[in-house]
Length: 311
Image (cartoon, rainbow, N blue to C red; front, side, top):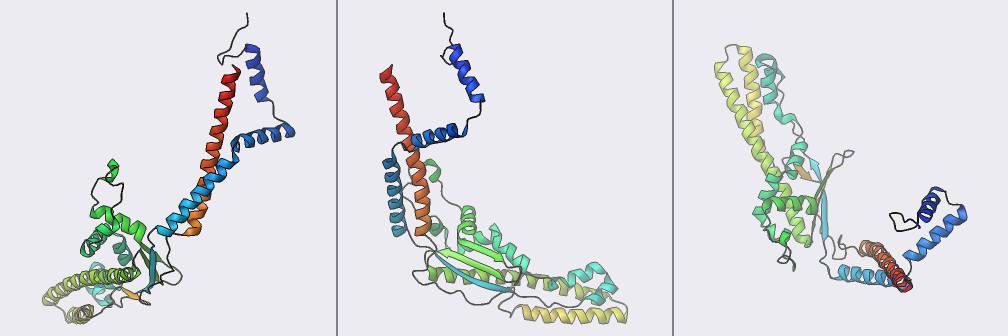
């Protein structure tokens, strides 16, 4: 009686097949194997061609009907604070005091970049301009899918604004900050970009005013308690500089970031999305993939049917 293996085949045939897989194929056999797999994958070439044509047609229709998105961009020049020299106070009152009084010497660029990336600032900006409905426009399938039923929040709006709308890059070579906004309305995008930079300047100006007033109050207290003439003269000099700084902070329009050129509105045909070439290339790739899978599936169905008929 002939014994069967676990695969349902005679033991001799199963052993022969297992040993055959251990023997490397010769070059003609490898080419024949590749040819067989190619024939299987492209069993129905017309299916692949039809799938690619349908995918490209869908991509063309999408590119022709989808809302156009424009990119408004410009460059910003960081405003370097001149600050005051507090070396004399540092020597007389201590290094910590001098560091506190000379804090505005540092470059404000990193603070401005951090502010543009912060959720706290972006959520306030979105709320003031009522951008949430524009960031999450209604879609036809919102009520059908469970994960699309939640109401968007300012936090999610800030994430979408940062990831899809606002781009900020610092050019290390030139020192300029390149900033852009992608939006369907280029005129509104230019206004929004200008407002965004102005609000950053205003936020940092208010912060500097508070710090300056705090250091002025501290210097006045130290001046009142100073006992030697040398200390009083050093404090009075720094206090005079601080009072001058305070008067300039409130009148300086471009406090931290200054436009190299105002944002320019692109012409109607200069949009960044949807891109016909990119959509077409993606459609061809997806069409080939889906068409090949369908073709191979048809091959398996035909082989299965022939096997059933033979049995």
